[in-house]
Length: 172
Image (cartoon, rainbow, N blue to C red; front, side, top):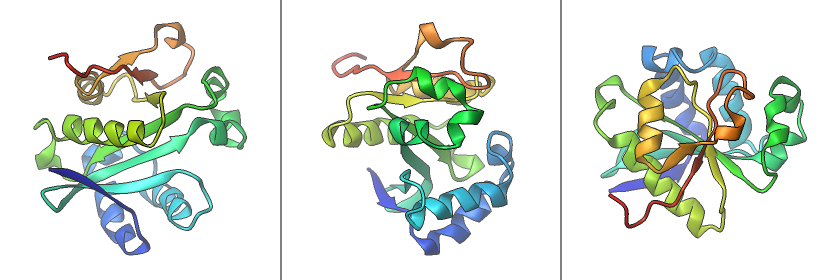
């Protein structure tokens, strides 16, 4: 069973350890910088909502939801001009598995599906994810969770591949 709990200040030490792991370092920025971003979220200086996801009560990874419209109005948009190509009402999600031994076991797909269900229940109809196109493991996971590449944005988003959730309920 997958569950989500908001990241608290006391979780920052756990996240600092995860950010140092090789499978995080490959796709995330400098661990201290990234931890600072998460701390900003926890302290309310950023509207992004960070969560620890758990499986059967054990902390297994990190997931967050960020609000496209909010990011379109920040300095962040200057570094990522493709944000202006996205619908203001959409949300973006990011996900990372805590430990290497939990990779390639379906955990990411399971967590992402559960998180998307939660977001849909909260009323968000457009859910995006933006992996590095070289991160083939992530792209496969996101496809399994119901995300599809947004074809009209391929090649317009620098180092990310924009994908949108397509409701696949009832499909195998």
